[in-house]
Length: 287
Ligand code: FE2
Image (cartoon, rainbow, N blue to C red):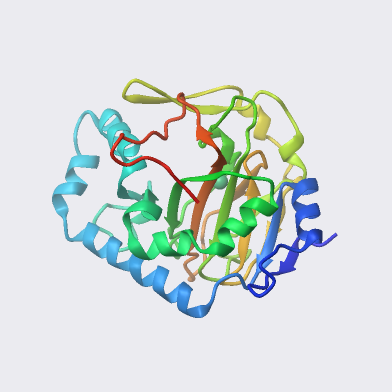
């Protein structure tokens, strides 16, 4: 069976072959999901956010230059659940124009452009087709993976970071739209087909008061290199990832950036131990 399936807005449904592939392998690609205009709008909006970040030096110093760096970073990270925050490449100075590697995690609720795109009727059609009857949209991020500096993302399961309730469901669903071509050279995704049904000891990033901690055995993500399959996709394609499927991406050593927009939905609720929590005034909303 093929991982790549043509998406048609006119059908308002996901091809059965795509659903079957997802159920068996934990991922699938719906090609040509976005229009050129949608891609341009999202990229322009992200560029504005990055520009604003660089024009606000106080923010940067508060995050990265105090002795209590870990605690500050935790505050900054935890509160990003209800904010639009920029995160930086580890090896880049914060004033470098390529320093920002990610914007998160409430773009879908706080930014009109990302909000409208995230809640297109077609994203609901996809969630329902893949088994989520009451999808709750809980997290979004814009990933830049800039040319020459974009860092590696090590093998993980998204369900480690987005913990769904009730316990054991491990079923968050990740949407990952390529906003530029993702190639072997610029750090495309790699997945382990079928890994969403392997293993039981799921690692979890949990919140303990004002800190985060990852609990569980990280060996669950250690697969042989040969088991990872590259997902080479074109700008506009949508990759869907089951919360349990192991995936990673390499460094971007090329001259081409690899922008993507990603969001996660869960069925019904986020677990109370999950790092991702919202204040009462900004609740999670349905997809
Ligand atoms: Fe991921």
